[in-house]
Image 1 (tube, rainbow, N blue to C red):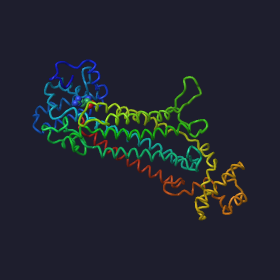
Image 2 (spheres, rainbow, N blue to C red; image 1 turned 180 degrees about the horizontal axis):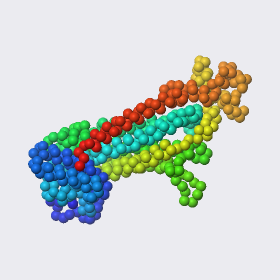
Image 3 (cartoon, rainbow, N blue to C red; image 1 turned 30 degrees about the horizontal axis):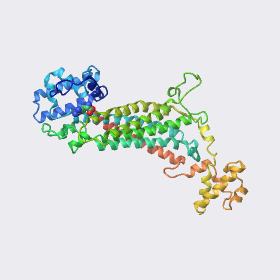
Image 4 (cartoon, rainbow, N blue to C red; image 1 turned 30 degrees about the vertical axis):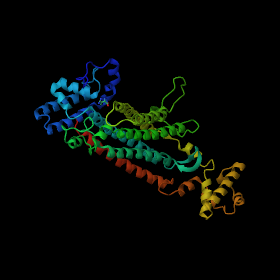
Amino acid sequence: MALWGGRFGSGPADSVAALSRSVDFDWRLAPYDIRVNLAHLDGLIAAGVIASGNGEVIRAGLKALGNEILSGKFRYNNSDEDVHSAIERGLVAKIGAIGGALRAGRSRNDLVVTDFKLYLIDHMLEIAALTTELVESFNVQSLATVEIIAPGFTHLQHAQPIVFGHELAKHSQALLRDIDRIGDWLVRNSFSPLGAGALSGSGLQPNPEVSAQALGFDGVLGNSIDAVSDRDFAAEALFVIAMLGVHLSRIGEEFTLWNTTEFSWVVIADEYSTGSSIMPQKKNPDIAELARGKSGRLVGNLTALLTTLKGLPFAYNRDLQEDKEPVFDSVETLLLLLPALTGMVATAKFNGEKISSGAHSGFALATEIADYLAKKSLPFAQAHEIAGQCVRFCESANKELHELTDSELNSIHPELKSDLLGFLTVSGAIASRTSSLGTSIDSVTEQISQLNNATKEAKLWISNEVALFSGMMKP
Ligand code: ARG
């Protein structure tokens, strides 16, 4: 059923109806459309546009329809253009022509963007909650591996020794920033567009603050033209999702690398691996690879929406119907990916012996020599040069730095005394890095305890927000 037609001599051509139709994807907004209609109804009753007797009939109809949508009893059909038309059809079928009274004082332009915002708030909170579970699994694994010594890499080359828990805990830091970004996003975007009407506000809906509050928003947007045009909230959500996706991708890449026969740092549990149809021996890290692969579409969806918005005239244009599919796809991709990745991380077994075995190779202690000389007040540039000479000597003598003898050290530079050898151990190098962000075992243990606190805080914040929004205007 179309919500227009009075001024047309005929209905749309089949090709036009097919092009115009969005209900196959925007049906996801149906529960939110019911919520928004209920809030709008209250406004119309308060403004005296709908008599309270009729208002109660409409409210009961909307609630019943809302429940039928949730149970799957009511669905859109082939004649429905979009979710809003389908719901009006369902309401009129239930309570008669009076169902059409709800259209007063609102347009699909403010309705659709309000529905969409509520959908995103719900789902961004769900994504935040799932992300905290991934953070928790990293926190647990980090603490369990805080005493495993590992080579730290730059340029994928051995750089300096670290503890492995430090390596894992870095992911929790990045993921907590993603959760934080969802919080910022919510604060900035918790403003209702309802009441903007087609673009200029409505004389029939004088008090949009009331519906905004009923829907759980912090307030009403400040300009009706902006309210129906604004998709910043969707683009920003897609950025937050893409950034999170990029983090998941880098986690995926790391596990894929660590899972190679050459590394053998991690064993991925059978439930989180897949096999090959031809090579019976294969056990592949497909979850990690999918985490890496799916980030591509998350970045693509952000680009798609920004490109749609660029240069678009203000107020509503039908181009804006293109805002939804990229968002639904990004949201649903994360809802699939996050639990699987969390399971993979939580059940992964790290091979401490293998991880530690290479920690001192690749001249990973060269910085210790430079630091030793710098502590003796040599300018660091000179200290760096001398440490480099030690590396060159070891390369030609085919030995590691900690294998240098007193006399070899002395021949390279007289300030290189025998006490240096006491500093040339991986455990010494690690133990010396005691600053708050450093790799000493104590520092990393403290970092993990702060991560645990931050994760708890995030979970509390999320459950408060979820309670706020889910308590609002449910059918
Ligand atoms: N299906 C449309 C969308 O998703 C709803 C708004 C239609 N408004 C209009 N003036 N044609 O954007």
